[in-house]
Image (cartoon, rainbow, N blue to C red):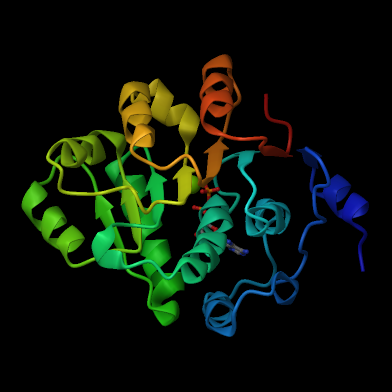
Length: 236
Ligand code: ADP
Ligand code: MG
């Protein structure tokens, strides 16, 4: 079997942080419950992608992560599967609001994340809903009222629904900012900051980005606590 060092080298993974755990190079080594492993097998996946292999053990330790990796590297399951484990440990009441919150820049991406959550969370009975603009609020509010474990949302629509006081984020303890650079490019920083103010500070925060410019570094410094940084490939 490959050592952590040679696996990282081969897959261009670099990590910054204290005592970063070695990558999990096989699905069996993750310790994920059988209902999750079954879904992964059903999907026909043979091994974790590098971002998954390296970020799962960090996320499972409950630590904050900032991951810099390009599109198509498997980031969605990188944060969703540890999110499922987190959810199970909480035993929260879905009627009181979500435990896992994922912010995503667009309706299309948010919908894809929800699809992935429903597919891989089905046998774990995980309940996920999606909030995005450009569609009536009624059906989205109805879904929320039924109770949810995971909310995937664009910042604009979530902020509207927060202002209407139709969602509570006081139970959120696993917060994901997906495509953070794109959300900032789209001008969502004020909405993101308002949303995060409603999330308890005792939480795990994971940030995913394809690029690492000053603005993204700034928001990471403000929202994350001692994050482990994981870079895949040569990103700026
Ligand atoms: P990213 O968010 O990094 O752009 P996605 O999470 O959308 O990437 O994943 C890209 C594609 O790879 C998706 O179709 C996803 O189902 C698939 N995928 C995820 N993990 C694996 C894996 N371990 N093996 C093979 N395919 C995977
Ligand atoms: Mg993605």
